[in-house]
Length: 244
Image (cartoon, rainbow, N blue to C red; front, side, top):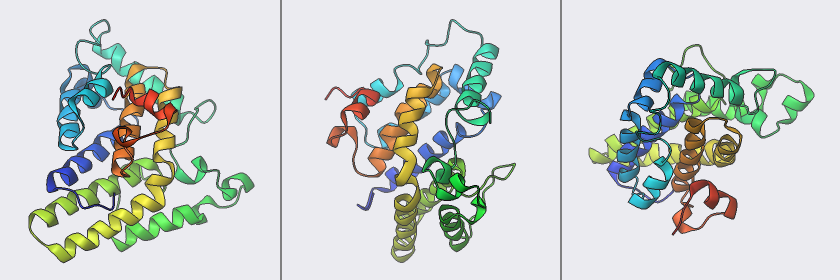
């Protein structure tokens, strides 16, 4: 991610963080409708093209998301199926199989010891980065700083600002934002993002979140400069369905 990208890449990266972030909070009817009608799949295809993914990879990543995949279920049932899988994965304290919080995902000692997680180093570092950038999450209700949806909202903003400043030839400002983006990605997103999405792919019970898992792995590996086309683990290659 340290290599300078094109302006179009930064805007597309911002859009992808937004898309992935929409699945990290309880899915809305609007999201389900966009999926059911194929509009979101079309948008994701355009984003992946701007991110310089090959058409073959895009076809593989979106194979289970594009129309007419969902024709055998009504839109209302489709919406509830997505919600059910979100709950299964993330939101039920009794049986959910994954956490959306970085500190907990990484097995923080403070989680294990029952100490105040708000004072965890992961949380404090994220809070400091947001404060330095004058960033306040718009997600309601408010989520803790190490929640992946908040981290992605922050990356979405940074990437958008990278594109805007580069487009306007504001070199110094673009360099500063790029450094902030690189630092936050390395210190937070890179530490758990790909592993998280591998688990989403493996543990999801419905098609939509399996596709989200594939997209998350592919995108974050691309962001870190280690995409499947450049070489990846055998397990990740099977998730991404890369065939050369």
